[in-house]
Length: 104
Image 1 (cartoon, one colour):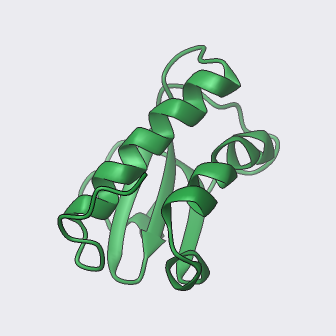
Image 2: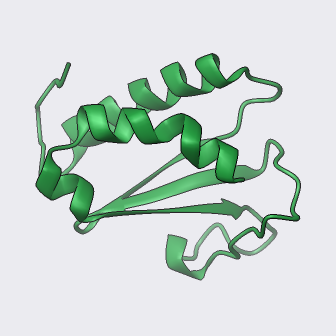
């Protein structure tokens, strides 16, 4: 689980401003039956002993905006980084704090 956060941390630093990064929290959670209607804070957080799989979500919140990135099978670290970075760019462009911005 810590490895997943290590892989995506550079993308968070590259896309988010210093203020946005300071206001961002991340959690690794697993979707389970009945949780689809809950807010991200209510989903069960994984522990270091839990296995990562296709129902694992890297959830993040910046200010009041929430987003997430699902695990995609057997991705390499590079593939995960690239996909997460792309999804984070979309998140920022659709967020209240970064509406319409395409960040490098």
